[in-house]
View 1 (cartoon, rainbow, N blue to C red):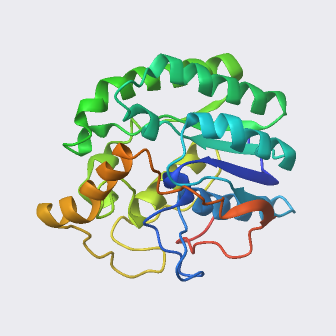
View 2 (cartoon, rainbow, N blue to C red):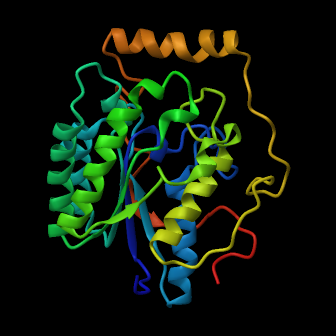
Length: 269
């Protein structure tokens, strides 16, 4: 890809992009996440080009493709970004009646609107769910959906962030204790992969250290504890058609300068 430094980045999606399970050292009680980490990389790159980066994160836990296309895309267009990331679909595909082709058609309409607005679209496919036994039944749907993502990108000139093909995401340490959200280590890897996909130079971060330079603790739960704390409450919400994000808005609804970013070993170069 040709080298481009971005000025305004808007992230769309669900809990993965909101940053759940990646605590922010700068804002106790809040989440960081791969998109915020990517914004830090892009901001450093923008400063090398003589300007800064503004960033908004419209992602909210529990959201689905219909929410992104119906709510987040129109919001993003009002912000006039030159880069938009879209990572969505996991919550949709876990519904019993989910049709990955129909879901992809809905997603395509949102990508088309973003591209018509002039933004570069970084369109992520879905993780290979074989890393978790309880997600393996959805692997076929995810594969069909991901095939459609590549077609959407081709048809509309989007850039694909291929997370399915990153084998490191099969490692347990990439995932938080709930086994469905990325750990801080996973968020860092995804941010660096996104930067690489965009052609933005960045420094690699070792897999054994956190962004603050301390050893990363193990985040494993015994199966029975995981079942009680995470799996059963999640299943109960699904049966009651309740989302963990009900009543919540985005954490960064308006673009703001990236003034505090995760410390990277070496930084952009």
